[in-house]
Length: 126
Length: 126
Image (cartoon, rainbow over all chains, first blue to last red; front, top):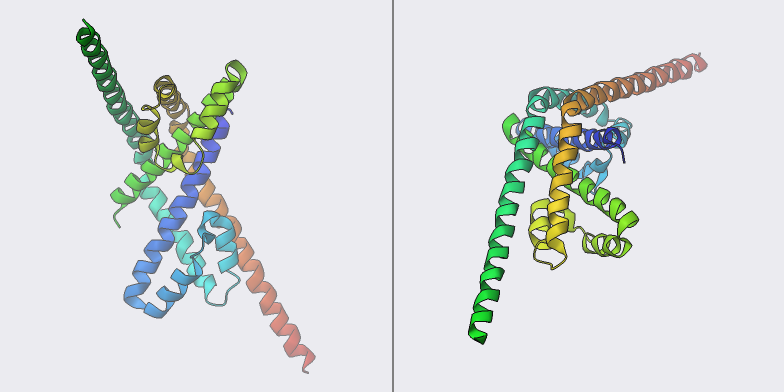
């Protein structure tokens, strides 16, 4: 597994996730302006269809009411991507560093506790 | 749903995914050096445990053989993050633009085809 492959797989995961978020946003917007369409889109997008975003979009375009929705979802995901991706590397890097630190602290506490338990067990043997 | 929330959720997804990749890498490395440990880690990490990376790491640290593995996984995910995240925004942006283009082309072809089918249906009526 090369870093390049990992980056490619991760990019794919992110693209799928942003498409999922775009669909949720479009459903939210439609709920205000066209509730019937919102219900249809919510129902259509259920059952794990969004796990493969490109297949989902190609499929929804074959529905009579799906063409316009597909174009809207594509525009929204493009705009979400522009607004969020820039901050992503920094957010993930600091998230990992912070969580690694927390986990190391927990581990150290556990080791110290078990050390002191061993000592107290030993001293109770005296 | 604000862009900031979407960025945060996406960062979380990426952190989980990089942790998953780190576990897979450590399993691959162990398969060469310590096959028994590789089998144990593979088994331990199955069943959707890796969906919440931080809970997984905290849990594995409570296993006698898990402390060292947890530290190793944390180091590996840190290093994968450093090697891949920088390229991620550009990769996702161009992936979305490219796929949007392809989908718009497919849609246009379908619309053109149905238009020409309508025309030929109409002319066969003459």
